[in-house]
Length: 417
Image 1 (tube, helix red, strand yellow):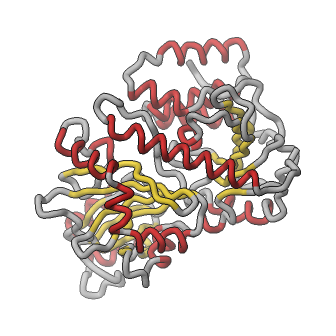
Image 2 (cartoon, helix red, strand yellow):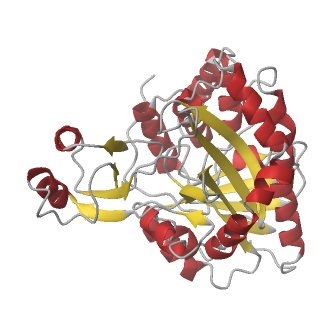
């Protein structure tokens, strides 16, 4: 199937899609369960054959393609969907519950808060409104009890976030994760600055450097303008999920890195060896909901750059056993050890919902890799292989939904219509 090029005309935010979304959660769960997703895809194609302007079908196609890591085709399908419509609806359970309006933006599965998973088990009605940097008017949106800024920090998204602060200044219902400027401050150097004087948290220095400074360092370390040398961690500005992230230990490595990475600006940080006595690295993901911490996962790997999907958790039963201990004893053990760090995170980031990737250092501090509102959190792992995840993730989802209900109940009786 060929996806038509997107129209240059930007549709009004107030015009909803004609059909509801299936949602990304169903796509990810199906793929993780190794289900045959061809009938889902064929059904979406049939919908488009019947109605070429079925924007929801295109957006669901994009979600399935993203879950399959077909990023180029996913971007094309998403762009085509958003050229037709920028407002989409999703009903959970039997519907009829709290009405949530989410401000989101175009991008991959890490561009926005993973609401489709977080609302699992609810009866909520969710309206996504896709914004871009040119947004200037939020009138005519569907009635709702609560709104949430779900757009993650990135160089592309920061203009939207900063504009939202003005647009939402007098919003008549409560808005979670506002002001949006707090999200925009979660750059790597911004997070480092937040915790520079916090004894319970180590957020390694993250310094923006132009490509020219790295090239000068490569040629002449003695006259280098960089604040530190090897080993250092380098990544392009705005990269996530390890894209372009490398540990550089020599001039030869830096030379090769710059040959492969063409970006004009990078973050550099000193490399912190957080391996334990057995030589393995361990990274935890933790969500914070209204100040309370919830375990998401704990990965163990031979590689310092840990991603859960390639950490060998499926292949190593002992790593799963260790993760089960982490998740099962999180509140009584891990959260107690790092109570001071968790208080600092909650107070300084000051958002209703966010998540972190972190590790434990031998001196008792929490090593903070990243803080964001769009880290992937899901319930798609095989419950036979990962039975210990089921209840903690269910509690996390329930806590998020409870926060929404409590916050909506304290808001105005008026609704945006």
